[in-house]
Length: 268
Image (cartoon, rainbow, N blue to C red; front, side):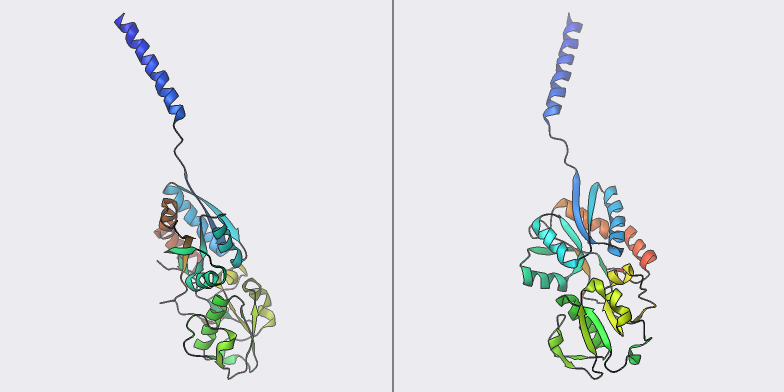
């Protein structure tokens, strides 16, 4: 009788345990949806995705070809985070659109360059040279500061990282500056004497920052470090912290060094 009772109780316990188990919620998977720029930056993010997987995080990458759409998608809730921008760009976007978006952790720096297919040095640019720059305020200002650093123009004092064409105080060579969509500048380069081109667009167009530039931004102390960004109030989500840790990993640093050879360098 005792043996039968023990088997009966054991069977009953197993039935109850199984029933109880089916009522428990499944363990939530750590998943994050991240917006990135297509091309070189997406390549980097694919490495980050693999590192994140070893940390128990599934990363869904959403590539974009237009800078202006990425913060909009994050603010709308279509993304959990993005990884494509620097602080001057985010500041300009917040000022224009009121986004509640904050930086979470640094990723890399892409020193911007002045590219030319017609001359081999800044000094060779002719009077009245046509130079293209990005038409968004932050990258346009960045381009103007690069031109000023090369002595091609002089800017009014106190304009910092965000000068505009109206802030040009000196133009000794009478250069003509054309504002174009950043993604269009590589295609326009043959028709210009030179163009300031964002590194991601330059890489996507097959340009080499070591061979095709006549001037490059300083790498050390560069204020245009890119970062992972999230909606304000969500920056401490575990998934976002894990994604940042995956980005700031030795594996990603090694990939940047071997793949881009100085065109994209770690910022952490």
